[in-house]
Length: 81
View 1 (cartoon, one colour):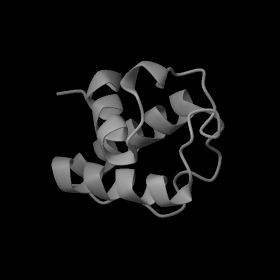
View 2 (cartoon, rainbow, N blue to C red):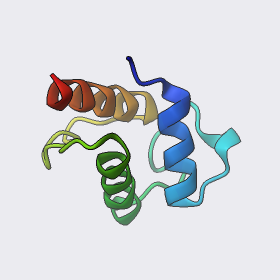
View 3 (cartoon, rainbow, N blue to C red):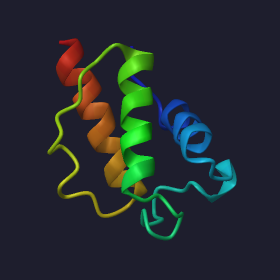
View 4 (tube, rainbow, N blue to C red):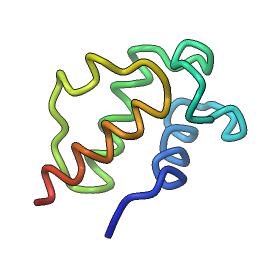
């Protein structure tokens, strides 16, 4: 079962305390106020929710929220396989 953007965006909004309406794929992480501490919190929450382990260096080339979501989904699928 594929993970949807909406599922991940809900986790991001909850963990980073960001208004869900601000979370659009085109936004940069800086635009929405997602800092490194928030990223760690989000990744931990995703790992716990989906029972996966996400590589620490997976987000090195993340430019916007869409890239972040795509990387999360790829990491989830990779560890579930």
